[in-house]
Length: 451
Image 1 (cartoon, rainbow, N blue to C red):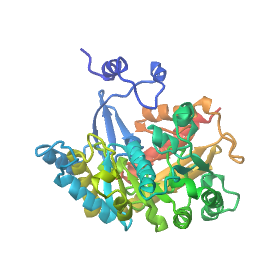
Image 2: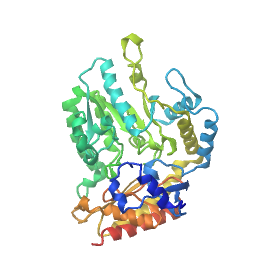
Image 3: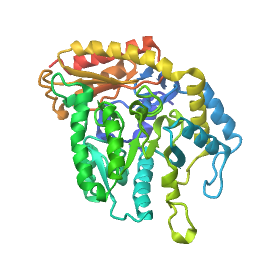
Image 4: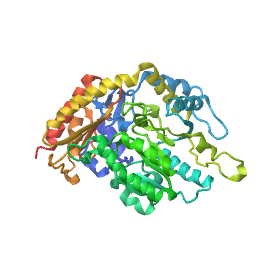
């Protein structure tokens, strides 16, 4: 019996329905069964290795099969695998809550746990709405979001996002939200700085808040990088202006740091670069360094207090997940935070980010690269049919797929978003591995734009 890639691919395609995938593509696009991982590398069943340039959908921080995180999870497994978090607690969730509130922006003191990023957004949306109901402001039930935003794919999270590819078909099922133009700096005027553009675009948000504050529960946004929205980026000044405006208008600010938290943008949390504290901060992905599903919403004492009352008042927040605060996931998260603390990760990342940015910016000379942009350990390369006019390629041509196929042939996992190629590697990557990653991307760009 064969046990190579084809064997496992055939078994998979007989039963598994994969996420974010047109399954018909796999009639001629080989499935890659992964046998093991180590550091930034994945290995298939025929021994071929792939550099994980996207951190396995942005979750992996310290490499696959990290010995320190492995040991922590293994130790916890011998003690307690799962227990209900209603009426019970356990040491890992207590320690993790203490650790997260210690490193979060000052004033975020209460942790509510769920299973994944979309669920964290659901929690934050419901928590904001429910808060205003508990304090007697029942008209505040709408949400303001940015164009091109993405917050997940459960119905509440989908509603407050704005990437049409994911949202359009489900629109009849979704609540109505208020959408304002994104501060995305790809659209800035010639000679305009990121800060100037982001400040100018804030006028739309200010106008929306002035008009709708009486009926708005919260503004929700992804700080600095709209990841699923083609890795579009903006300046921290927008966050500072938004915090001030939310305070003036009496509206919550929800920061979706699911993809950008835990060092991705250069600071532990992206909000730090604007010196702000959101009312609720959503975390997942890198929370467990990519090991196990876990998410958290960290909020303030005043919001917590609005739910704290006698049972008969029916003000409690009755949101629950079976695996809320799972001990194994919490132990992985604690081990990850310990690596941050002991290894001076953010300092090392600054050096890696500088090298990654310098190498990636060499691609700007290509006649079909419209922009290379960066926030910390996230770098995006935007392709265009016409570089001067920034005219995009038709999405139907699937040029990003050509890059994906070529990269796999060269042993690198890249997964462009349309015609935006991006790098978001684990923090244990070396400068030499960065060089390989960028070189394979350059080859892929040549192939994808040669006609």
